[in-house]
Length: 328
Image (cartoon, rainbow, N blue to C red):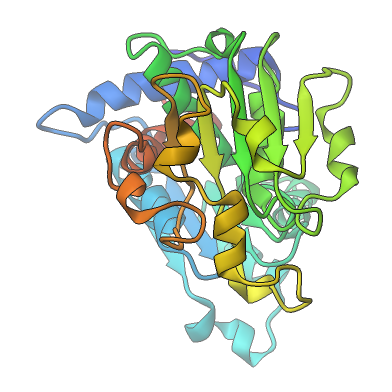
């Protein structure tokens, strides 16, 4: 199993190298094999404590991290804001320090404010605590583990036996939808442009895909923006559609959900523009009939959505293992 790793914290994928991606992919593939066994538990993090500090509602990510920790034999602590001392005036950093005092080794942080996981990681380092902090989604900043499971899902389709970053060379991947508010998109921009020769195309209405995203690909020159769907998905190998975040649509960014679906919704007819064998991804939760047609979402010949959820456990096991210095 891969052991080359030097990240105490995972806050952003901006500083990931191709070797880091391959280490995650290789380790996740090993844990994927473990999850296919009858006994799906390994003692790699036995005796360690993983605290899931979710200051924001979540179903998939929280459950996935909790299951991943338990599969690694770690003890888990779960935080719920509504029943915590936050309601009594306790600060977020004091909450984190309380979990540190309980012997926590790894903290998985999700918060609606960008920068909170980084602030907690900085505080842990200031205290000299050897605690790893993993960003499980912060505001409109990043969602590293989701992007890594998306990468693992795509690479596993291309080579189930040995998923690796170089498989993206020559592939065209489109991300469609609410790019502006999406932390998933921001992390995926880093991961899906990391391979030499990969091409990532972003598509959405101008209100949800501002010009500023052009600079996010750095000097790689393989990130492209489109305000119309067709050129983005033409000859695409993979199409990822993002949830329209209705709770953030307070500034009349879209005329209507129906019009959005007519212009940017992914349907069988539109997939005819893509390469034969195209696969569709969605990080969930899905607004059926808005971002993607319901029948397409449920069609295993096209949809990788269920596979993404399955991949999430293996990838998050890999991240906890690598950060926790687990043993094979």
